[in-house]
Every structure is written in C-alpha cells, then in structure tokens.
Length: 328
Length: 254
Image (cartoon, rainbow over all chains, first blue to last red; front, side):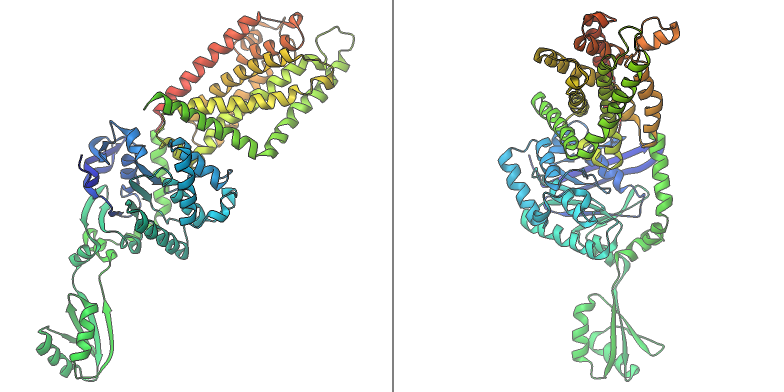
C-alpha cells in the first residue's frame, strides 16, 4: 500500500443536533509533513481532530489515517497515532513515570521497547529528573511536555497536537516549539496541529485556514501570504525626488512619494534591501520593511481579524458547554 | 480488536485503580474513620442499650454490617472516580487508547472491587479486637464474598457515573443512593419483622444479601435471614446485570 499521504480526508462532515460544526472538509497530509489547521476558536478544528482520532463519529464523509479508515478500523487508527489534547489529560495524582508506563501498557508496547522509548522521550523533553514526581506538582509547560512524550511512547506515525501551547506563557510556548522541532528532526514524524496563534502556524509546512467549519485556503505559509500582496518598503532619504527617480531607473519600480517618505512594493523585501542600499547614491536615512502575515491572510479571506474571536473565548466556552449539554 | 489485547486492557485499567489507591494513603486512613466510628461508638452504644434484650444487637452483630458498609462506600467512590477522570481529562487518554470500552468498564469495575475488598479486609482484621475469632477458611470465604459484593456495587455505581458530567452529580449519588443503600441493608439492625414498605426496599437492595452473607459467615448460620446460596445468587445476578448495563451505556457515550 502506498503511504505517501498519511492522512486523507474526503468531504468530512459533523453535525451536532442540526448544527453543522464541520461542513465537508477535504485535504491530504503527506508523510513527514507538519500540517496546521489555523482558525479562530469554534471554527471546527477540534471537531475535525476528534473525528480523525476516532473519538467523534463523522456524520458523513471519510478519513483514512496511515491506510486505516477511521470509521471501520478505529483500533488500528488509534494504534498508529499519538495525540496531545487541548486540555490536559494526565493522571495528576500519579508520577510522570506511572503515566508513561500506563500509556505504554495500554498501547501494548512490549517491556523492552517501552522502557527504551520512555527513557528517550523523557530525555528529549528534558523531564528525566522529574520522572518520579507526582504530576500535580508540574508546571503547565512541563505537563504539556509530558503529554507530548507520552503520545510518542508507542511509536506512532502521526502526532496530533490540538492547540499545543494553549494557556501557556510566551516563553513556555517558545520552549514547546523548540521541543517539537527537535522531535521532528530526530524522528521525521508527521505532525497535524491546530492553533489560533499566527506565529505558530508559521512553523508548518502547509496550513489549512478554517473558518465556520470550512477550509477557505490551503497552501504553504509563503504562498498564503503572497495572496495578500507584496512586501512594502518605506524609505526616508535626504532627497526623496532624486532617490525616487534613481529607483525608477535602476529597478524599474514605480515609487510612491508621500508625506516625506518613499513607498515601494517589491516581491522579496529581504533580498531587495541590500541591493537598494548598494545601488542608491542618494543618502538613505531610514528604511523599514513590512511583510504580510497570516493574520492579514485571514483578514483578507474572512474580512475580520482572527484575534477578534479571542476576546469572545468565554462565549465560545459557553457555546461549547451548551453543545455538550445537548448531546448528553 | 482481539480478545488478548482487551484482557490486557482490563489489566492495565485495574492496575491503575490499585496504584491510585496505594498512592493516596491519606484516603486509605480517612475512609476507615467512618466505619470505625460506627463500629465502636454505635456498636458499643447499641450493645449497652440493649443489654439483656437477648442476642442480636451487640458489636459483633453490626461488625459484618460495617464490613459491608466499608465495601459499599469504597466501591461507589471508586466507580464515581470516573467523573473525576472526565473532569481532569484523563478519561480522554483512556478513550482514545486502542482498547474497547467494554475492557475499560470491566477494568474499572474490577479495580474498584479490589480496592473495596482491601478496605473491607482492613476492617475484618479488627475481628479479634471485638472478640470474633476467624479461621483461615472463614477469611478465604469472606474474601470471595467481599469481592463479589464489591464487584456488584462498583458496577452499579458505574451506571450513573458514566452519565455524569460534573461533580455536583456526586452529591446526589451520596444522598439518594449511598445512604439509603446502607441504611436499608440490615447492616445496623435486624431485618426481620419490618413493616411491609420497608421490607420491600430492604429486599431489593443488593447490599442486604451481601451483609446477610458476610454476617452468617462470621457469626454462624443462626443469624442467617436467607439461604447463603440465595444471597450468592442475588449478588451475582445483580452484578452481572449491572456491569452489562454499565458497559452498554459506556459504549454509547461519546
């Protein structure tokens, strides 16, 4: 069987009592790829993940993970994936080691492999010294690292990370990302993650932007940003008019001169600036570069900022609670 | 999913229950406080008050009842811990593991039963203190009975527990489930000559049969209310039905 695509999703739909949380999404995730789901809270990211990891049954559509269908073969799917949930899922009264051993046992990893993998993962996540401590005493970042370590004890092919840094402070978030990239280097794991942090999405090879249960764009971060437009360079010079005509001649770019500054639209700002400085004879006083972000991409696609949603997190939780309530 | 895999799953869930029990030493001791108070304060009070009223009211009478009470409380607490697991997220880890829900439910019931049996044994160890002598054979019989009772009650407790989403539900279980079961089990008073309505409630209570079985095993056939086989049959059938319902309900939850 070909496994070039670790995840294949075909028109996946989930309805909760008439409310369509996921409205027919389709995408593939390639082997070894880091694939990100980016969208505001309530966009359907977690529901999609829950269907892929077989805890929520799809209303319609199909999904295949590592060659196994989520509906007809959930056990094999589960065995071949590792999951780190949005909310902590550790047994906080037991030690880190107990949690890891439990995971290894329940995923039927033989003793030798289990102990080897546990030691490796503890080392990689820098938790070896705390392995015999009760999890309750761990910081948020340590718990998250322990969960990532745990998700990999049974050597899955794909690791799911649902908002891996939610609720962590910026410094800890950076740490977690360092660990994740180290992990990728060493294992070549396929990673599927969801996030509503733009800077985190930048770490992905490809991103699907999801809003209201639909994928509205899917591409590499670079290509997505190209959708918004060019890089913009702003210059202050001793003589804007002279500099302007010089630029027009040498780079065949039409500068806009306004309020004592020159605005240039270019393709690749980082590489353009050195050339600009080298070849311009007029003295440049200052120079600044603006590049489009994924935030701008989201804004362009939906007409609103992703951050606006964050303010409504409490509403989101209420909505979520209501959804659970209805499903009871 | 193959059978072997699921048997291992049952074992792992069971192991975790025991580990959690063992880690929480404070809980072991504090949960013995209540039965000990009932045994020594209520037991002594009753036997003093009814001195001369004939046999059947002494501390030795309620002793097996207190063993039953310990099993009841521990078993229900273990079952309801599934709500804790849900609240603290650990249940998710279990639900996405490659073992069936059936294995999880049975593992949980066996785990709760084992913990309850251990707590019951700790009370049983007090037998010499209150002047009841137990032979090794009696102790072995008691263990088997205690395990059966504990398994039935844990399974029964799992039924509301798999539906419960919040801790608040736990208080309801305590008030409408746990205390009535204890008071209506004959653990504290003889259940002969009760008014009809009370007698009915007593007879549908599985703990009644459990306490009867434990009592006649410890004290002797003279205190028996039912035939021991009737007791055993009721407890076993009750346990089988309860675990089946719990499994079906657990498989349905998302």
